[in-house]
Length: 504
Image 1 (cartoon, rainbow, N blue to C red):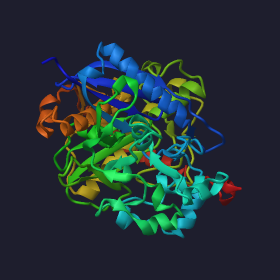
Image 2: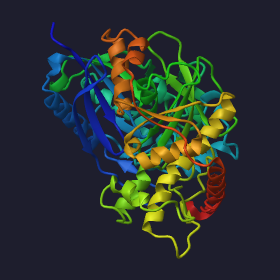
Image 3: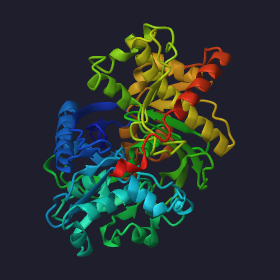
Image 4: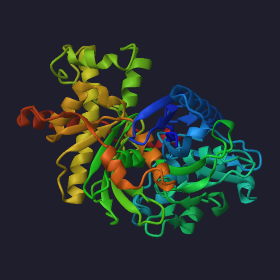
């Protein structure tokens, strides 16, 4: 029998990619395409759902061509996606009624305030999440309240909603011609609409947000056959894995035991700690979320620290300030100085996520003197990622009661040796990168492959995982304590920036 492969579609915040993996979890072919970032006004971030779907189809073809394979070589397709980004579309025409509202978007601040009535934790016991602009439910409400005719169509049963996985899977399995409208537990746990205990939609919360229950996708496990691909390049192949990108990375990193954690360095940073079958409420500003659910097995839960702006800060330095020509140049520039020169950059562009959850915060560059130059600012940009990760890790250690002994890392920024060494120094624990750093796509592939029998289960994932590089702490702990104290002071300078008239 000829060798078989699994294809993963990774629909991310800035690009879509498809990767073909072999049984050893190695990449044999890939394709990637960026899509437009739409900023209609300050605080608003959108994507064109039709562009995303077109790019997804293209990257599948690119990946298969790169691997020299056809659909006959593929046993299953797994999907992973930017989470919380929300689409509302007409199931009869297949057309979105509005652009996708991206997870970074802050337009729902007023809706969030009104829903909470001053209580940010109103739904937290049920859904594990604070009321914040980050999550899906308020985005759906905004679309229904602000797009002409949308509410009437929704109440008439014509509109459906979903995170990006739902949109991709619906289109992939036929769209208006019998497309499957589903999501998995990990994505559903980011909507603010799913009860963590029952893994079902909470009708009371949906009513509070004035979202008809008929709009919501069916909630399924992260690894099962949902349907079969209908596009020519994959026709007839089972679509069998679905995980939000951070949970997919956790799966791909083989973090299967309670207490194991990974941190993904992408547009933002996301640290996830496996808490097993136990739902652990956070007292320190983290999210309680689903980690994964494989078929009929019990759900596995997690604590998550979400950081809005890390890699996108490097992009901002490149695109908005033109201080570097490419993202990779930042390491050399930042490495040309020994420290940050006293400058600290707090990138609260979309408010602050974990552990603060302050939508009133905005970005600040503080500690400036005449001594500071562009290299110091570049270094401050990288250091911001490491400092924010330390804040999340401190919260995780406090919530779990079990100090982390090493941190598994993945994502594009892990190629930056200066950042990874600084991260180890600031955390005081080793930082470990695997051989296959594209663990998000890999996790989705594993889920689909396990669902279809290509892999036998979690042990195959563990056996395939291999360490590539390790960074150990090497800095003076007293110096680390000093600069971290200054970082915490810098963060306070971003609070209360947005006044009540921001909605006017």
